[in-house]
Amino acid sequence: MRGTSSTSFAEVLRQAEAAFAGVAESSGSLESEAQELFSVADAIDSSNQLVRTLSDPGRPAEVKEATVRTLLSSRVSPQSLDKTLEVVRRRWSEQEDILDALELLGVSALLEQAQSEGVLEQVEGELFEVSRMIDDSGELTAALDGARENPSQRATMLSTLLDGRTHRLTAALAARAVGRRTELKPARRVEEFARFASDRRRRAFAAVSSAVPLNEAQQARLGAVLSSIYGREVQMNLQVDPDVVGGLRIQVGDDLYDATVLARLSRARSQLVA
Image (cartoon, rainbow, N blue to C red; front, top):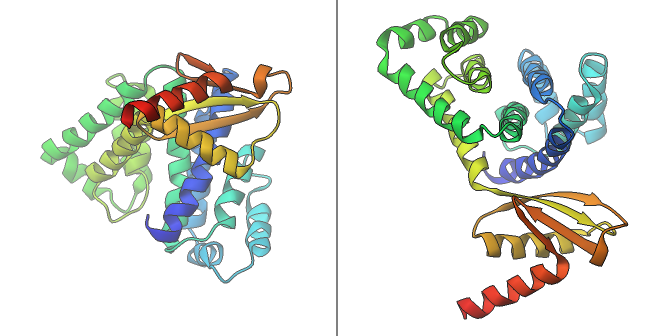
């Protein structure tokens, strides 16, 4: 995605990942929600008119939201409906981008599940291996290409092949990669998901509890401080807890800070760089 779509996707992904992290922290499963998001993308993709309606920047957001509610309210969970509404409220540069956004939210849900189970690195590596396996097997490539007009058959084919050979989340992601009707080759689709997993794994994740809600400027400053400390992008999951001592509590992996400690670390890093 580029331009407006890139900005829109970053916004919906940030919100979705915060919600996914909350489900994972409560030991819930995200696999059914991921499949619902995939189904939503497929349902929209099945109608050219629907894709045009939901991706049209000139159409009021209220009309798009009403269309989605009519189509999906009785078919998906409130969580999946909310994320779909967040997607259609945004502006997208290309029609396909709205479908890509919904699909990648589903992918993100499965990756959050992998992270909560401690297998994210394994899933990432296996996806790259599956991509190479497809490239290296003329027979498999031909079989997947031959079922191009039947994406569900391709998904079943790859799921059967990977059953017992990879983690179940790897198999689910790979099946989805080849199970969407697209011009991109199956191996490249699986590779795209692997790279998305790689990007996620390189990011740090911070659980931030504050005594009062942080405004956008405060969130931006906190994100900049954390990124400078860890040398990479830090995704923040924000929660309000009036009982937080000192007004702010941040946990990144095994690192636990309060606002005072974080400020000292930031000053120390600035002095070292200077």
